[in-house]
Amino acid sequence: MGKSQETYNKKEKEKKRLKKREDKQQKAEERKANSSTGLDNMIAYVDEFGNITDTPPDPTRKKQKIDLESIDISVRKQEHVDVDPIHKGKIDFFNSSKGFGFIKETESGERYFVHVSGLLQPVVEGDAVSFEIERGPKGMTAVRVKKG
Image 1 (cartoon, helix red, strand yellow):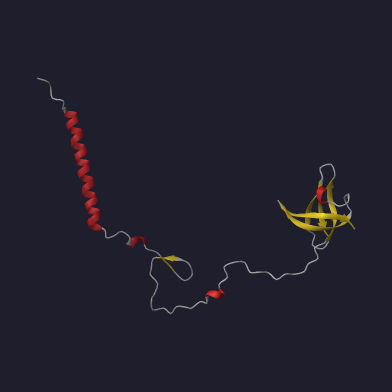
Image 2 (cartoon, one colour; image 1 turned 180 degrees about the vertical axis):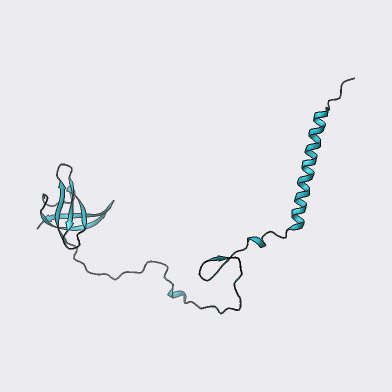
């Protein structure tokens, strides 16, 4: 006849597992009994100014009617203003070996990048030029640059 496979240590571990399972089940039942749906604590309201509150809105308060057509949901169209596309300026810096430089506009004082590919005539620093501007990959760029 063989020895029993159940040892004292195995019995103790099994008792602990059963006790843990019973405690867990008891805690779950207590939570069920003590709480309602649980959603009551999680409800939030938004007031007329967009702030989140925990108090519901007052139903007796008079609501303001808003005309849906008066709500702008995009950028307003700007009036087309005829602006002379040709700007005047002076070559502030130009590196002919690298093929780029900057033009300082006389009216606004803005500096615009210019590349050798945007030149109609060769220029040097200090030349008065006329040019047009276009949006480049890193900002506004002077194009169609010519002396004069």
